[in-house]
Length: 159
Length: 76
Image (cartoon, rainbow over all chains, first blue to last red):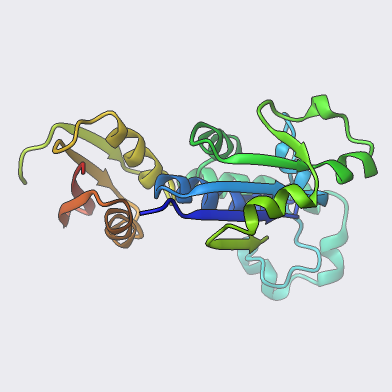
């Protein structure tokens, strides 16, 4: 049986949206898939050595909040200073309590499983990002490089 | 529960960690050897069925006992 292939484009740089690419990629590897993730725009935050990702309740009506705040707390007040860091703290605590893996751990598991991580060169240039801020073992490339693999893939996800 | 060669306690871990740890443990075993996995994640029941089906490793047993899930997987 030929090895299946999974291609993922990761475009988001918040704590909550950082999980799907790494969870799916690491699981796919465990199932025997050859896997590649192309990180573009805000998704590049997921490749930083020091991850400082946050989650925002602002404009996110689907986000469960402590004390049922998502039901009664005025939406405008979610824009108050400190709300984002408070929600980030609570989300991280909840994840740790429930045995959800940390992002660094999932990312390491992906690298151990030889998931190829590709940083979009154009985005790095666009935002004047410093290549040394990124973890080792990644590749810098463009859209054509992504299609080289994605064109052969069995599953292709845009996250 | 039948004999096994290696035990992996994945209690308290959530998706996808039990599967990832199991995969890692299996890679250290020889073909025909059996891994016993203990998990508390209810999602792991369906996940280990799917894992076995897709990787060709045999899920010999899957049961719940004392609030924990036990799986026996024979390496292909």
